[in-house]
Image (cartoon, rainbow, N blue to C red; front, side):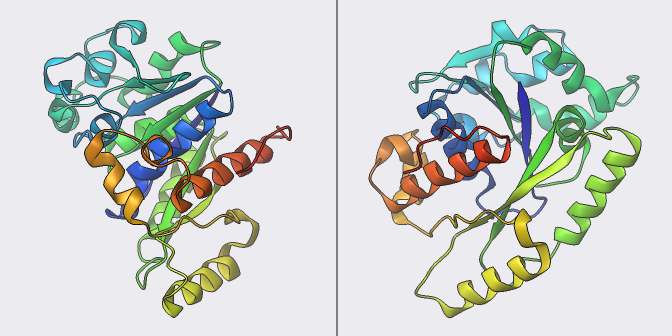
Length: 260
């Protein structure tokens, strides 16, 4: 079971969209996938059609109420993809866990229940570097960083890398950077190409080859409670996420993957 945090403390970079669609793509090529929505906004949950999450036990109950994963897991309409939803109560975790011991290890300890049940666990982190994101990084084997192809793309990335180094040094020495996924790429915009070249110059092979295009279909899909791979499987965004999922698996040494 490989645990991947999808993290970037900067909002609006396509983090949740990337989490939902990479999870869907991995499931579509036969992997058993669990998506954990760790963002109090719960966008990954609604993006997979879970609208009653405020009245349904979710990840907060696992972390702070000793609920079992099996009792809070939803089976999505995508075969092989399960979801643990988030609700607004997650926003109070900094306060509610204040006096707890090992509060940075709540998720890692809980995930022991899932060992052997999934091939991949993807964690949609909130756009902040607080306790929830630290829990995700401590529980993960690797981190996937979505980075938008816009002018301020590299702003804040140094802070995220510094946080990753601190987590590696103090809490999870096995954490590595799976890669940087370039999002919101617009080939008609010369600035996108400049950003891509700049990021590849600085980070080399850490940057995935597949950029995720800016797409109306990708933007529309969450409003229908569907990943773009279900909403419009033939769209450019769908093909890009399938290729990104293939790249992720190949990085893990799984080479019998069919790219889109």
